[in-house]
Amino acid sequence: MTVVSAAPARSLTEAECRDLWLEVLKRMQEKLQRSQFITWFKDTTILGFEEGTLVVGLPLPMSLNWHLEHYRSMTLEIAQELAVDVRQVVYKVDGGLKDNRQRTVNILEHFPEPKRRKLPGKQEVKLAEGLISKILSPRYTLENFIVGSGNRLAHAACQAVAAQPGGKYNPLFLYGDVGLGKTHLLQATGNGILKQMPKATVVYTTTEDFTNQVIEAIQHQKMEQFRRRYRPVDVLIIDDVQFLANKERTQEEFFHTFNALYEERKQIIISADRPPKELQLEDRLVSRFERGMIADVSSPDYETRLAILVEKAAEYQIFIDMVVLQFIAEHVTTNVRELEGILMQAVAQYELEQRMPTVKSISEIMRKLSKDPYAEPEQVGFDLPPKRAVTFQDVVESVSRYYSVSVQDMIGASRVREILMPRQIVMYLGKRYLRISYVRLGELFSNRDHTTVMNAVGKIEAKLQNDPQLLREVRALEQELALA
Ligand code: ADP
Ligand code: MG
Image 1 (tube, helix red, strand yellow):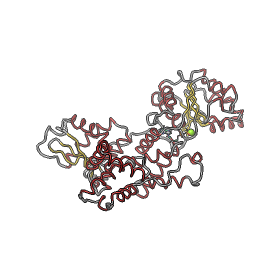
Image 2 (cartoon, rainbow, N blue to C red; image 1 turned 90 degrees about the horizontal axis):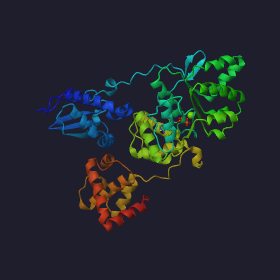
Image 3 (tube, rainbow, N blue to C red; image 1 turned 90 degrees about the vertical axis):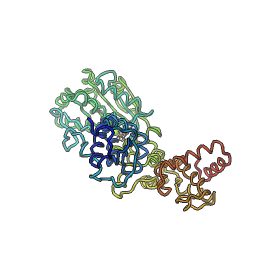
Image 4 (tube, helix red, strand yellow; image 1 turned 120 degrees about the vertical axis):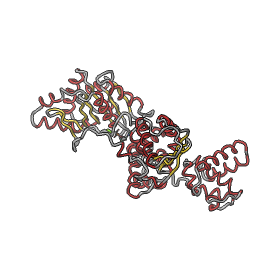
């Protein structure tokens, strides 16, 4: 569809800009995950289009880098597809765009949440007479599970099972410590199977619920009925089977159910906190668990933790500075649930107080959550942040002392020669060690343009290659600040 005839001689009106942007967004949306799309394109618009330059307006400075890196070429391509004579896309940050209905596309209205199957307001669904499954949460999918070295095999096995339940990997047994994604994978696999085979009878149950059902059946002397119940099941997913320990009768019933389904080549998926051999269960059950595929889920590495945070932040539709996410990923090391917990606190802070999470506010949250500051890191699930992280302020002050120039002058607009180099060094250190974005650095230096900061950092980097004097000075500063 052609929105604007080629090469308009006049500039576009506000309404035309908005219409054009809506068309761009329609195509963009097909290429992105919904959470990403909403996060990055909410309150955006076209601010102008003249002589081949399309000016895209963004509501928040911190989204600029992301757009430049991830969406600029896609935006250009799409705009060109729409037969508009666009040669380049540039960005402009305009705080006035936030929730400005006149100028921006109302993204939630034009791109509403796809209708989900209406879920009853309870935790369970009845699949057949007496057959009950917990509701699979649509939040858990195999696509939004971040894959890293600690969970690659488990994720691949789940994908294989979702594609072909009852196939090679039967039963599928996942094990690992708490909070590392077992339940997510189990439910995601169930969701994946249902997507492909909506008619399949997929039962997801916890060991606790299964035990309660057995107890109830015994009490009412309905054991036969209980066994019949599971006959129509195509996929049985049972979470946390370590809790079958010491429950002989439930183990026995589970053994029968398992065999009946297994013989019919129905898929069984199991999770536990340790491998089958270490479970304190009847040998015959353990040997059944070992028949198929066993995969462990272990703690994610730094990159995976960071990727999980980026994904979750996008799901919660909140902008969090990369520096902050990196800080969380560095300090919350063992447990993904903790990682999410800290992020949720940050989201709450943002929503309740309209306060952007900062490294400082996050480290406060972390201190609060680890009630006893002397607790062992394993007990709280994350390392305490160092006594005091180096802040931007520290860097500015050190550089100011070192070169005997005032902080005011460095941060301010002064163009005095003596100021320039120290200022560039602060920018360089801020970028390199504190990982502050160019845009944010620009703001910190009296709202300079991000390209100015980029140039400054580039200059220092280049000089460090062949200016030994500068190299010594910068090394000294790095040491003083304990950065390197
Ligand atoms: P477990 O069942 O092993 O105790 P969960 O599946 O409940 O752990 O995971 C805890 C939280 O962490 C869930 O919200 C889950 O979505 C999230 N999570 C864990 N691992 C990942 C991952 N690799 N990618 C995305 N989210 C994850
Ligand atoms: Mg679990």
